[in-house]
Length: 137
Image (cartoon, rainbow, N blue to C red; front, side):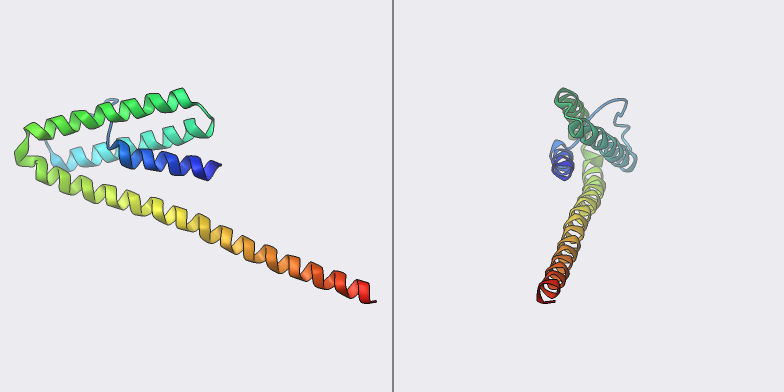
């Protein structure tokens, strides 16, 4: 369940695209892209925590805040066309790196589950073998 909630929060992070809370565009595409990504990362952690504690209204508030900030940056760079391409490029790179991190985390969960399943099967096979030996004694 916790993994599902983390995955849901990660999806919200990728889909929400941005938010507010003291983060404002400055006109420096590199600083803005990093600030926005940092903000989203922090809010995603907060949303994951809220979802893991079933605080759905809090998660909804965080989502709305993220949407508000995202819109601020989108509107700002819609008007600041000379820096829009640079902002989009840097933000896109940061978003791809974040997505790769989420994918690697998910792969790790499945790898761990696979290893544990293999270990459980081996333990069960050993237990059956030992039980069979006791029966034949």
